[in-house]
Length: 393
Image 1: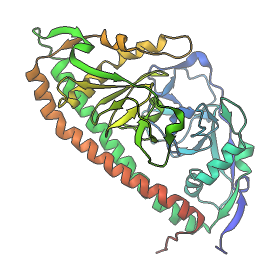
Image 2 (image 1 turned 45 degrees about the horizontal axis):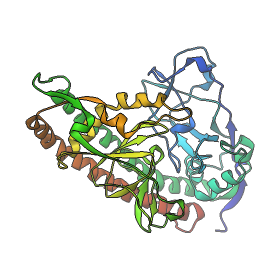
Image 3 (image 1 turned 90 degrees about the vertical axis):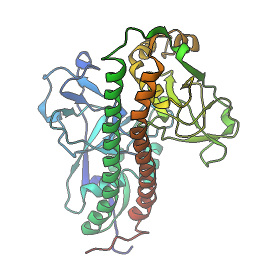
Image 4 (image 1 turned 120 degrees about the horizontal axis):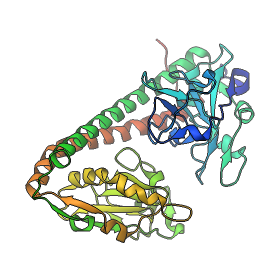
């Protein structure tokens, strides 16, 4: 470790504040301008390409347009666990969209040739760095950090060439993870198209009208006692709501030794509060808290149909976000009374037979994602501390 030298981040980088974009032009309706927010950061770092906010005006300084692969950092965290604050992400390469530098986001500017930008990107995804950021943050329910706090962080850096090798190993794993995520997105869109063909674009006038409860059974979640929770894998995995959901399957995991209500493997999961209408699928039997409802067709084998049928109803379900005094919510009776069309069984089975192999491929990719993510997360602290060496060419 003698060749590693300590630097303050502020010796190597500068963090630039974002712009206060006018609220009246911020919209959920898609435009060619995406306003990057703290919601676009994954827990642990990395860019999260969903739940975008858009901007519908050109009246802002052009210097607040991000470039592809700009390294950014979230300066505000709304979660009670402060689990995204200070983490880094990279702006995606998207030729059809502009990504805008919002005021709650910091942009890294590099001011020294002694540092590899990708090394800093990974440094800002380590637990040690995050612990420092959280420990120096201000606020109570909403936590904040600042450029000066980020720039004050001190750590050891190897020579630039070794920084590049370390970042290369981690980025290679991340590229494989990104490839699988993009493949899963494409596969899910393919099955959605298939669902629309079967049930929306070519409806059969003999299909019955009914209520959601006529076609599906569902369980409203109930949270166990808080003292039963742990992060050590003891008991059964538990999901409490939207914050636990990833692409297709929940990814953020706690466990409980006193489960109350369950979802079975392949049940469709819907968040029922704050916000209503996020969707996932249970990859195994799990406990569901009060923020989640689990759905299954009355014929349990029709799980793909269930998932895509619920997905087609999400706009109806999300209308319940307007209910409640503070947070939106949806009740069991609300679900039971949603109007639906119930196709004949032959059509449902035909769709299920075509969808099943594609959904199995999505699940296979998901399992590979877990393995690669575990490898990356295991290597990250060892590489960034010098415990594990990356040999040069």
